Length: 236
Image (cartoon, rainbow, N blue to C red; front, top):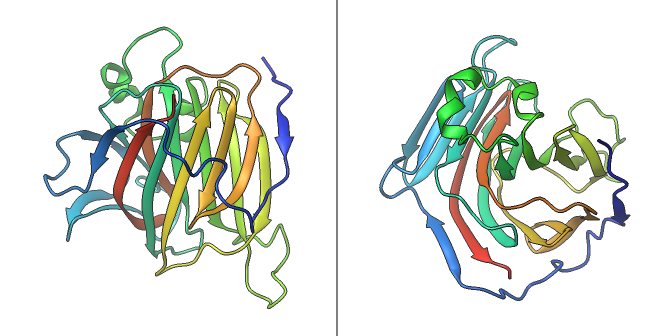
């Protein structure tokens, strides 16, 4: 089923959709206790080092381990504010791929943990038939969006809805570079969803058939990166 998404313009210079935290802290993860609250699908290696969750899915060529997903075992409500740090260490093809899943669930009601072995290679299409939203923030390594004014590569940022892998909104602007720690924020209130990087709103869209709550997941493609300081607040 296709949804007629109502898309607002990207506002790189504006603030977040809602800077006000309307509810309390639901979840906080600094990985000080390791990976007890997570499970992994695919990838070459996932480990905790210096308080960061490292995710390596960057073999020299496409093959086993070139994609990876780490799921949090907690279930979250539909209306939330999610904050996290992401830092690309390296990428063989300069993808610098930061990919985040939220509101994820199986339409049949089966817990995703019970079906994890069917996704042990983390094949992307295996997530497209589930309920959920995907935010992708990466380097435009193919140059599709053209360069920035200074000649540097732009970031490519997009928001999708599943089932169907429907593109809600996409933009090319700013940067997604190696060696930079980005503070990312996802805000969902009903069908209104916004994504911000370092306090600046990059994407806003409205889903006319809002998804219920579910799991959140960390994902990458052809990239070694780390994640940290994940916080989820109620936005009800």
